Length: 238
Image: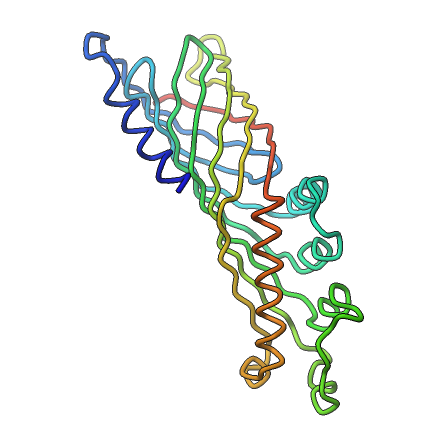
């Protein structure tokens, strides 16, 4: 699995550091944006002149979701499925851990990332927008029940990525600006779906719909989950 490889590689890099180089540890906090994935804050520990480790957490909020989906559409994401996600999206949360290798003011990094995305929208809008004529037959007794129901979805995604960055130290200050270009790839997605009616969720019709939506979501993230990013952070050394 790609994420396990990144963790193993991180340890190899740490073990490969020459013990003869003097230690220059440094603690740094930062805030900024991994555009278009998240607004974020985090902590970086410079454990060696050549190596730092970083953890961060952030949120994907409007309008980042629209730009995020647009980038997936450019890779081939079905626009009807994109519209379902876009119109129902609420919020996304991301957590990232990675290691950077430094050379003077430049650095190269790898990272693993977990994301939790969720949304809620009208069930009928989602079904007719995406399935249209291919919608499974709906029994007449269910039609009044479907009106006004909400479709709730959640996606847990696992990403891995690489970045190239440069540090700009502000004069006579503990602050620095980091600019980065990154590339993130989704390798796995676990999805769940429900409606605002527990009775409907237990029917075979709902099972068919949710199973198909799950397949479409998984395929979308796996095939089109490529996200180039521009990252801009303000660092503070303490």
